[in-house]
Amino acid sequence: MNTFVQPIFIMNISRFLPLLCISICLACDFSHRIDTSAAVKEMKARQVKRVLPEQIVAQVDAWGQALEKNPKGLSAEIKFKTYQGSAEKLIQQVSDKKLKEVLDAISYSLSQKQSIPPSIQKNAAGDSLFYIFQQANGETTLYGFSKSSVIQHMDRPLIK
Image 1 (cartoon, rainbow, N blue to C red):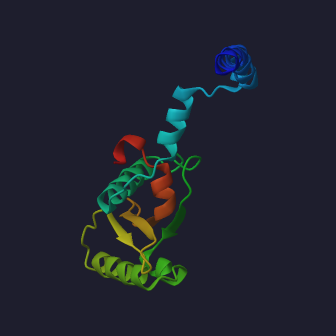
Image 2 (cartoon, helix red, strand yellow):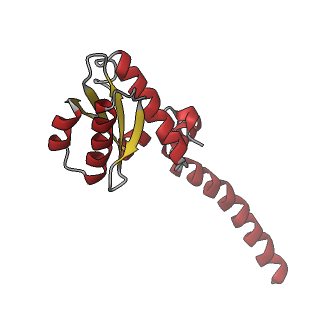
Image 3 (tube, one colour):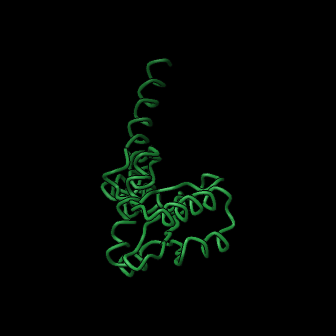
């Protein structure tokens, strides 16, 4: 009896195995394949990157110099605030304590007939950077950039 049961069992398995393989292949839907190259690009784009404070300052400096030459150049791409006028007038417009101190120093330097090179200053909270420069007509201009917007719009090769 053992010899009779064993061949029937093997015969049933040998018939069942191809049917199982065919049903598994039919159950797999290969029409929804993922494009791996596109997935890799998207993963790299979403990857968290390290941005150093020096890189943020360098980017604000580059944008500030570009805006100094052409004030309309970056206005469509990057959000920033602009303050323009005499240093005394700007002291009253700006609410940040640290910027008021910087503008007070600029006002004093101008009263002493000193030349003032462009500079980058942080606000008291440290969440924004301001590119400050003197125009030829004697007015002071401040371009304010939010750190988060600077990081979002930085050139990708600069980010490590």
